[in-house]
Image 1 (cartoon, rainbow, N blue to C red):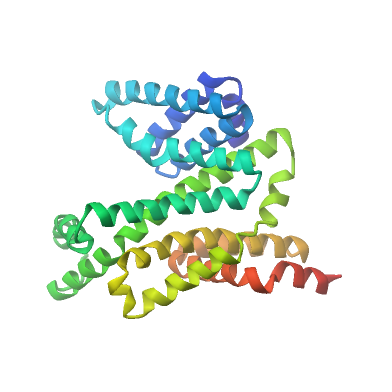
Image 2: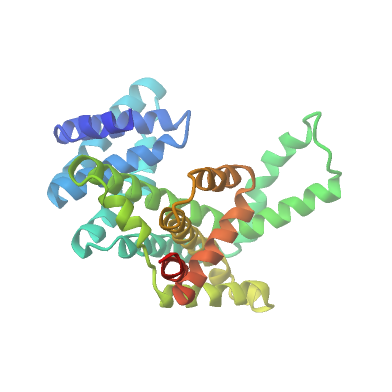
Length: 305
């Protein structure tokens, strides 16, 4: 079915725009569909070029605005998708297209996430307080539910903890949406025009030591008293962890392939990602960071030989 989506989208700019619009509309009910919508934008840009990619973005904005207006009476939703998904993934696809480097594209998406963090800190004087004010009405509704087991003090502590990390989590989610869209678009491109090409490209992904060093600096700042002073750097850490989690995932895929292990190991990793996502993301990110020095893929490949 996923291949059929790509095949239909590649029949022309309007097919790409219609596909993206309906996937985005479906994402209002099932959010993961937004990754596929971003993937269509990436595929269109990578395959048909910058001009056609830009036309698709404009066309999908018009189509989605019409659909959202007629069905939901909310035209502004198209603007949210345009700024948070379609336009960013179009720009990152251009980076990949011009550099021919998947790592460059992913790091550019990471840069956009950090720009979002910086912008938030510039616009809002006290982000923690702002998030508290946003979260409290929601939590007030949750507390009234029968299954809620926290007392007032514990609930307030939870709100404070969430308010400290929300900026970083939102920025990381923004970047991850773009990166997954780019990866899906690249995978579709390979599936249709270069079978097997994406697997090789993803398995060999290397983000580089400078990005890994930057991530470790953010880690040190976050766990030290400096985290309170340099809040903007603390909020950038989740963004860096997101991209290095993808690097770690590439390492795991490559090692399973090299060692000719059963696909059960890959399935187990994704199941654990679903069950204990924070811990698995942290573990994969650490693998991704350490890979820049220890090169697990090459070492294990040599041992296998």
